[in-house]
Length: 182
Image (cartoon, rainbow, N blue to C red; front, side, top):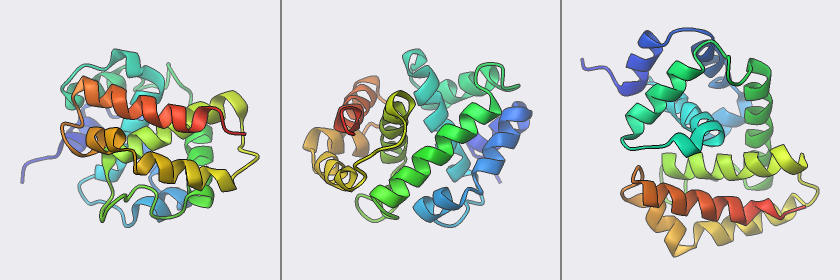
């Protein structure tokens, strides 16, 4: 059986970051948002994508696999972001999305869309890092509904999702959707 990219990363970059990713993959809010665990570590890879884009989006260059490998290598021992920083922003972001948008937040159509996961998580997390918890959680769903029907966002989230122009488009729209919320 051929290994998937995240399975290879876990073996190559084994260390503290892998342990944190494994722990966060069991987060109750995360599990409600993404569903059952992936035997091939696709869910863990989505967590990695979130952290890589949140903390190193300026370093993005296609292909996605290499971008994620570079982030894993850089923060393998948690020298860039600490376990506490990663755990806190991940937990707060997933709890906010679950309570404000609901369990289907990552499923604009039928299945979980990794491009929606990384951009939605990053847009929410960037807002949380600046302003902390949302005081108007009810308007979060309305902002999400507007974002998820934005044709430019959908186009950037459905095809060519690792192309730099599509990454810029979907992250910009997701960040704009939530940045000014209370």
